[in-house]
Image (cartoon, rainbow, N blue to C red; front, side, top):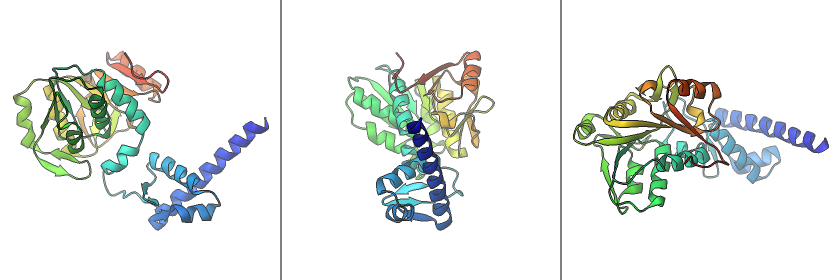
Length: 275
């Protein structure tokens, strides 16, 4: 009984400390790990763990040696920040998505951080001889460029530094000349009513073209995107064929999707990628 009480009390103290840290960063704009460790009388390692937890909750952005406040005026977080959020979930979703790809296919990826995880698993898998990847993601294209057996086609347009993506209508014509078997798409928000949505109209526009071109649409969305309506819909729910997510996805929404004939695969820490 004593051990249980001790753990519970420790958790409460950690939450209280994290809430105070979040307020400090929000009020001052930034904070250093060393200063926070001194202020709260804990180790720098403990403070770093607090910052990781707060960043996962979108309360701040970690930097070298500390943290800064999130600029709420921006519609989306920078790519480097989003890449660190739900990293384990994205890794597992990426492995499950990569298992669905067959050599000889033409597949399309958006510029999401989850799509980048899929690309890394494709690269690690190897053994490709004729895989074609179309993307508007700069990081993703760089990851796969020059890999044996994989041809990378980059969509043209304007570069958005926030998402490290290329947007605009310059790339639309490519989809009229090629056959795309599968589209792997992340999202800023996902609801049954709105479908897959993004934080900006520009990103939604290029993703809508990807949806139109693909025979099969595979949503790659971790649980934090579920039941959250983002700014611009690019794929209605009835156009989705498969949803890959982690096992923290809301049960009621999962059942609703299954009832609509959509395949939902939840990848947990113990089960690994589905067959």
